[in-house]
Image (cartoon, rainbow, N blue to C red; front, side, top):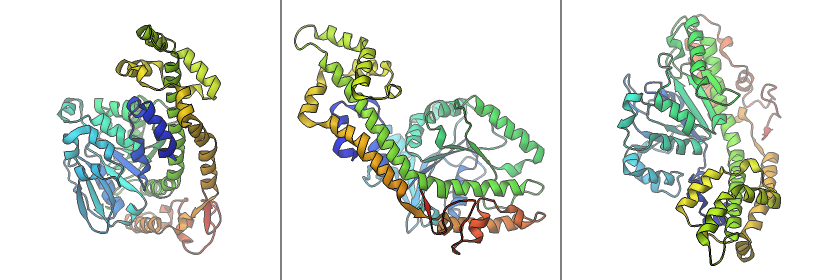
Length: 441
């Protein structure tokens, strides 16, 4: 659908140069991508090892992760070079080549036979640096993070209770790399058992205070509070809260995200098609207004100055939402580097190829039909998900070890208690909703 219409229209008007995003790579990703961000020693790698059920990635008391690591499923444990990953057409990482050799030297892949990787792909990232160290990067860290965020289905930002200060690089992450992706961001207050009850409340409040200056959305992201590793919690800490939060996070990552991944891909395709159509209409219409022989330079200047009128004309003719139109300054910068005469006139392009009609049909008919098809299909009931069951069983065992002075039953999250109890028995779970065997997407 994308290659046969949208991509062809983008190539005519260089949309990928107007807004580079490596959208085609995102379509090749078969499993949802989960990204882990945070300062050094916040527990990102330890968190991933916890999800994998073993110490596959190296961890230590000092900062140990200085590279991007993609963790995916494989029958055998294997390390993969970043150059190979970024060159493979089967992987969604070809767009990373633009960050250069220095970045690819610090990028690698890791395969292991962990069941959780059958449903999701994990990406570990270098720790966020303090102000004094940001110049030690040999590549554009913020732009690289932005690439991963654009391709991620879920982004976890981890914090250590003892390191809540927001440095310059962390601020840049929120204002640049994470901007526009707030709905996919989850905050994790890790190592929560390292502080007592009352201190944890103060830390939680301080974290929200710091985030309030970084997140501009009206609704704050979900914050999970726990200690994400396989060791027992420290005594005299809120074990019940930690277990509840940990199981809620597992539900979010192992069930909700894979369920929403296909919907998100289709929605992204719809958004991309709309933006490509707007871009083609703007440049194609502006090209139609240029003189054929005399006064070409003045004509280009006038076309750029009259972009607002072109916007109104296109909006009325093609019924495109004005809120999706790029800022005029973006086109002024783009046309400063590209000659408007190099682009085809919109009416001539449509007469020759019919691409505008094809993309309109994709937006108005094909994609809505695809969304309806997805909504009427059934997916496996999460209670029958063997990977989720395995994770929850391991979680139950750890809860039993931690519950030295708290009843075991109190550690079961209400979202999962009945699901675990009735797993494989075919009884409906009122907390999750739906029928015993299938759930409507």
